[in-house]
Length: 584
Image (cartoon, rainbow, N blue to C red; front, top):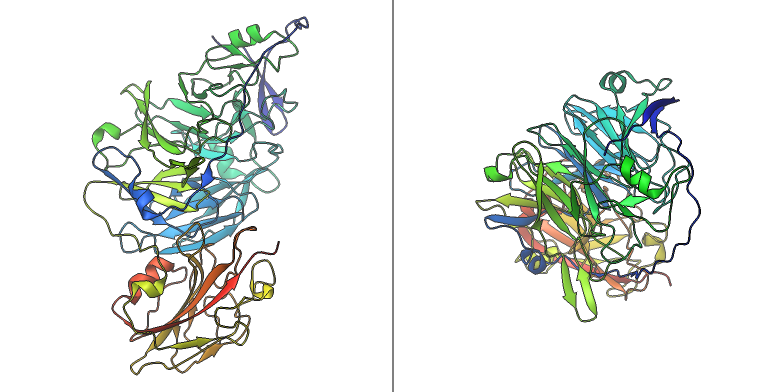
């Protein structure tokens, strides 16, 4: 079946529209559909659960990064720097594994942009998308992003599917996925439910007063977040999220091959292999005629599994049989019983670039619990690390996982409080004029209040102390374990306390060598308690460590880097524990 659409210029974009056909006659529709709202319970990503994940023989799954905040799409620069968009806070986080142990030790926010989601890298330039526009900026030597320019603007409103994704074709043309505003409806704006193309020259030469035009390359794609080109053949595939509320096993998640500009696929009137949507019908033709004019999928996967980013593997670490296959995280269902998805899928292709099969690659994030099902991961973004390992994000428990083949990597940090990792005498006395030992933390020190740090005091430092480390951690959070609220290093032993309201600067104390690291929001400095509403009070441990050296870690150092640097240097420790419960 071929789409006989024509190209029509519409301002900043070009649309493929069908010729008008006589409208169908109204007719009775009588269909019974059973639907579910079934949302598994969130569980902590404990080491025992992570070790229970199922992967092919010879692979292992590890924690690459924690302390993120709704991490979504991934991209890796040519120097190995990892970038992840975070939709909810609206920022871009840079991560680096500076010692090559397979665990990120530097992570920090380098861009702030509301509703940031799509990401692609070409050379030393990064492209980012929010709902309405695409931006580009140079990647600087330290990983930060230079001044951004607008590549294209005027993308339509988001509606139900506001998350744009980006990828470059083999010819260097930038493509952007624009989802539908609804589950299934007649879209008044032809830009929705499309894959759009920006010409190479236009993307390079865009200016604020002349953003690049876009062409609708394919339509009838409800929400094709994952798309990409088979490396060997250059064939373009897009993995579309199917319609909800057609039943437990309908609509399938569709793998579509896009062979030419102007192709139209079935949404919203037709799905799977020419199945007719009983609810929504086209105005100017029949659903059956729409099916004849639209393309069928080349592969169909379990309904409601929710395909996300698509990434073709070209690394050298995995066995050669994986080369040029695609990996697609399946974020998981909310309306299927039993649940589907919650896995990373391998999409197999033959040497010619033809799709051959689906098979699970990482599974086991769904686990049975007493009253049904729980989950400890919802995979979303995927990319290949510089060493050939596969990275994928979990946007709910806020982690990036690393899948590696052969050999052994560094062990991830124990999921316990820092004070339980180091065998040091508890001789440092820690107190606060604002927090009684074991007592409640005032609202103003929480993220529900003013979010300022409380005053602290300490004494009884051992001889030989060269510097102090401060770590504030919550062991009662679901993820990460524990949640890091504050780190500070190289506090001089002559300093016996901190005033209220320490700034969030890297060097927060004028004239002092103290430096602050990243918390579990990938932000520098203090982040006040914010336990979920309804939770019992969480415990917050303000831990002070005396060290026999100074650490001098770089801006953006995280908990992993700090714990590694502290090993073998802790002389003593002490703590103050306060509690906080979210306002009801």
